[in-house]
Image (cartoon, rainbow, N blue to C red; front, side):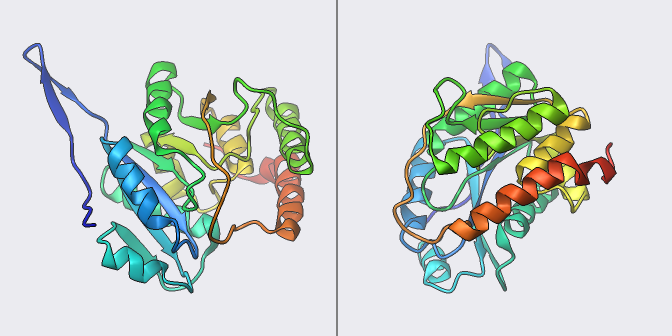
Length: 249
């Protein structure tokens, strides 16, 4: 399967030209050899006006070979930088190529590309700088150990900003051009809840829209159980304390 970045940029309507926003889906992937082809195909089939770029984050399996063999647009990092470094690579690419929006998508196939248009529509309708694809915007959050961590982070966000984010750990997010520029210029801004809070405190408008997600079936998650606990504590401490010493625009 040969796929290239697609450029559907303009269309004529009632004798006037309407520009279609340039959207780039950035997909960090680490050892996702079993999911990248299906995800690329789904992006091509359902997100018709969205370009996509996989960031191979130093995978040790056949991910790089498959990406090359199938002609899937990607950048290969020489070593594993983690989610923050991989996503930042995609953000810098988007800024350098003058994209209007970046959509963060996980490489394991959990996120459904068909919802990208809904995120974009929400951003343009509400003028939000960041739109979170939320599992719980319109649905009740289930009770589980994993969701306790999400509830804890939501509480920290409420305490520090006065605003409610129901699914702060969702990895499906859309960033507008202003947010792309901020994240490209400041290395301490990452695709994590504490950075989202810092941007909120800096005046960014953040909203959620309901999406559906699938369960991971293959590949390796960035977050093990041990890392998940450490992640929750780190994010909580950052939101409550560290952020107050970070520079706000």
